[in-house]
Length: 323
Image (cartoon, rainbow, N blue to C red):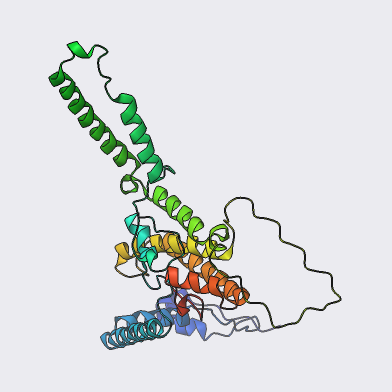
């Protein structure tokens, strides 16, 4: 047992200090405990804060950022020059018809497809149906001549005919405005563009003037049974690769135009995260379909017709597309 400490006289309390008390021997074994402090973390945070307040470091950061942005623009320009625009491609008359709401002729003649034929109508109404309905209504509402021609008034009949003609023209103009896609919303225009893609690229239409894909170079084994005949198509073609690619192209054009109006460039719309993600998904889905169709069609007439009509470039199916 250690010897007890001598008693402390109260008269000498003012002479005691902390250091003097700490130098006194302890009756218990001394155990050193390391005190934990967060000084290292605080120093790191303060150093980081002062680093971002340093004007020289901030100037370096801005310089590196400007260099990266300039390099990205150079790479984008080189890719657009070599592979073309991966989103919009080349603007063709068929692509322009998506915006001006005009139908293109569907006779398979490329020279005839350079000029639009008639404006598209809403509510699934064809221009010929509208003309036939207006002519039928004109005949139904036309005033009938009097039974007794001896007592008929020619001036009154002429006035009635003129009034009927004016009313018919007003009604025809009103119906045309109601059925015009210009007065419709974006959903109406997208629905009409989808139907136009089905009518233009569907195999129920293209089989009439496009040759099938070239046969493969692998010879068929004569011992195998003959290939089964294809089931005849029922209704219009809505699921082939070219139809799906055309529909995706129409939707991509709508989204890219909207984002350009938001931010001034194809990847604009800085805060429109949802539409940017939708555009990225549509572009990548179209890229997969293009790669599949290019491999299956082996560069045949169906592939060339799709590429030339939609104005698709190599950048739409080759390499990595980043938006």
